[in-house]
Image 1: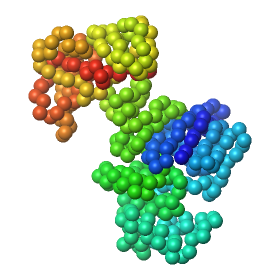
Image 2 (image 1 turned 45 degrees about the horizontal axis):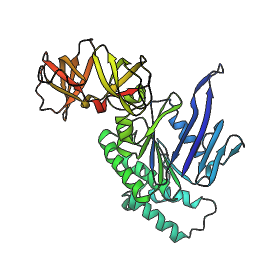
Image 3 (image 1 turned 60 degrees about the vertical axis):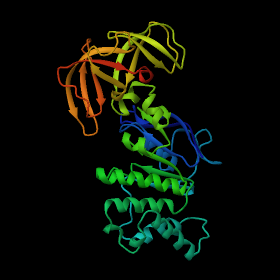
Image 4 (image 1 turned 30 degrees about the vertical axis):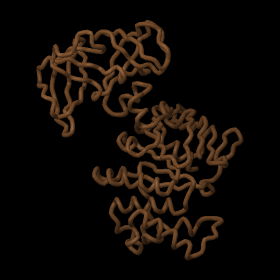
Length: 370
């Protein structure tokens, strides 16, 4: 449905130095997919979205939507925003305050070029969109008399009523409180699936990306660093940045014990001992490497209860524990003075000062790039 190929957008400071933008980003979005651009502030995700929408003119690259080329830097082709078959929901919603709910949603249809809609067709489409977002009973209410969540749904209805090929959502939940964000997250996914519209979603919130997305593209420092399903991104991060940015993780250092083939398990020598680790890329013996493991993938037992020949076993001391409701989070100090975070069920009964055995589950210990 959408292809973005080697897209470049440079912003320059007053001194002429590069500042922000995007640098050679490439990805594709399948038809009907909800694809999320995830990353910290300033990484380039909104610039990418605005370039697809036509609100920014990139410096180079290609953007193709279906069979239509929207931008081609080599040919100096830039299709105007109003000629792109795209709907967009902004972070601020951009609701027309002088219009009622019905007229806000009808606006794109009334001013759309090359439309043959009759008055009754337009009313039918507007009412269908309002019913889908649960606002049909508010059709005659002033847009300014809606709550924040209702305004967000109104903006969604206005973007969907045109039945666009592509829907762009720029941090649409950032203005809502935590409980409403969670409710609207489910609502957005439901609407996207029922309408079947291909969607690109921009957020810096990892939990939003994990809950909503079919696939996630992680950006950092103007570059795309990893693309995959939420499970792939979480369980198989390719870099220390992705491992740290997506949830909690433990990062350790060591050296490759012997040459390793890509996609195989290999051995790492570290100050904590030898570890069996998963390698996505090949590695030569002696190379220094960072390896990561999630807190929930570390088993904790009283010291002496795990056999000494158990792979990936370490002995440590519980420094402190924190009750987080559905989990208990432990900080464990190991011999190299490293501190490992371990997450267990609240029923676990380890206390501060306990000597414990830790087992870093081999299938979840991942070698990552720096």
